[in-house]
Amino acid sequence: MSRSKFSQRHCGYCNKTTRMEMMGEMTTTPGKSWVRCTRCHHMTLVTVIDTSKADDANLDASKATPYNPEQTFRIGEAIFHSEWNDVGKVLSKVRTSSGSQAIVVSFEKEGQKTLVENLR
Ligand SMILES: [Zn+2]
Image 1 (cartoon, rainbow, N blue to C red):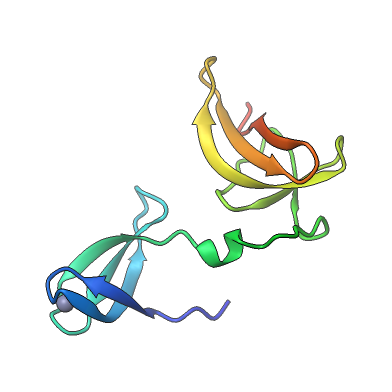
Image 2 (image 1 turned 90 degrees about the vertical axis):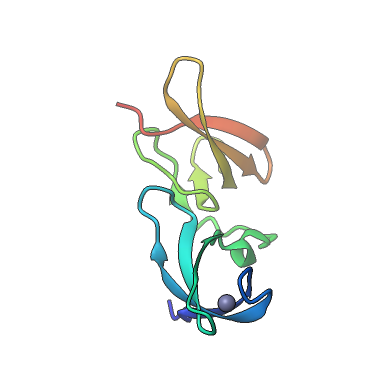
């Protein structure tokens, strides 16, 4: 992966779109990252969920992670459900009424499904 540390973002201090330097993802809040404006050097917290990949219409079963209830998954991750022979993309994470972790997956054939993850 060769993603640039710099990206064009709107700086609230400069009130214009400037070059922002990626300072690294917050460990406590995944998907949020600090960026620093290269003009005024103010730090801003931004959402860095990669939407460029989320628009892929066709999911590749060979590249998808096989679904396993004991595993944890990331939002946007492609997963393969062997029982249904279907691939889907993780849309969000939820907590079930029983208190366990679950993922909401949009499958190509089965549609939207909620699957248990991080099962112990
Ligand atoms: Zn700025």
